[in-house]
Length: 265
Ligand code: ARG
Image (cartoon, rainbow, N blue to C red; front, side, top):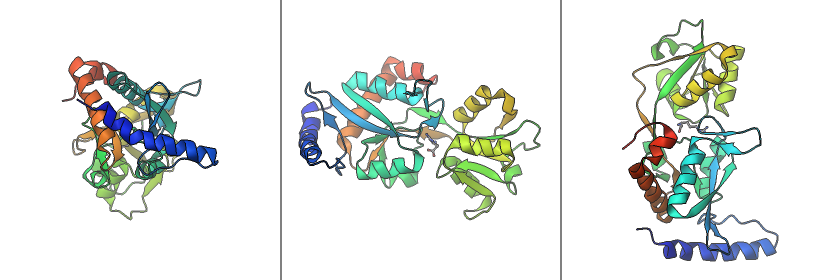
């Protein structure tokens, strides 16, 4: 069982420091995370995300961040008694902010990779994904190999970007890396690139929501299975254990599968 006292013992000095800093007009950017506790003893953890990633995180009409990832963290919070404050910080800054403690965790359909595990700790997986190619409906692209000499659009520093680099080599001029996945797909529609490689659920959601764009998805068996995890700064075991406890409970009760629409061990 997670020991709440332990978490509070970590948080209280930070909260105290933040009050002092706030009084001085400075902002709180502790290296131990930014967890805070209100008067009633509810812990709030700061989440960073890139909310241009439906169906996992995107803005609704009212300006709220919604999606599968939001539902997953809120369900975790309900299980373990913490609250989450979700901030749209963009994809690349997200990693920086987890490192420097501006946010306590990253929740952004983040694939657990060996390289990232050198710098971050990940929870148990909560979603299985893979890469998918998206191209124009009338394109003759049928497989990843067909992209060997084509202009490929990707979201920068994503597993889709890494897949493009594996195919064409790291310095390839035919790889165009954009800040968000929707921008990469827009450049496909504009004709700047001939295909985009991205996470399957996100590509399929885009195609479904934008039929007028006349895009199609192309699968390729050589794309490996990927698993999304919630990401914390390496060594932040307090938060990691809490999140894993919540995920485990959601797996046992079947709530995780209800939210994500898939079973995962
Ligand atoms: N799963 C991919 C990765 O981890 C892409 C995630 C991008 N997420 C986002 N919200 N933009 O590299």
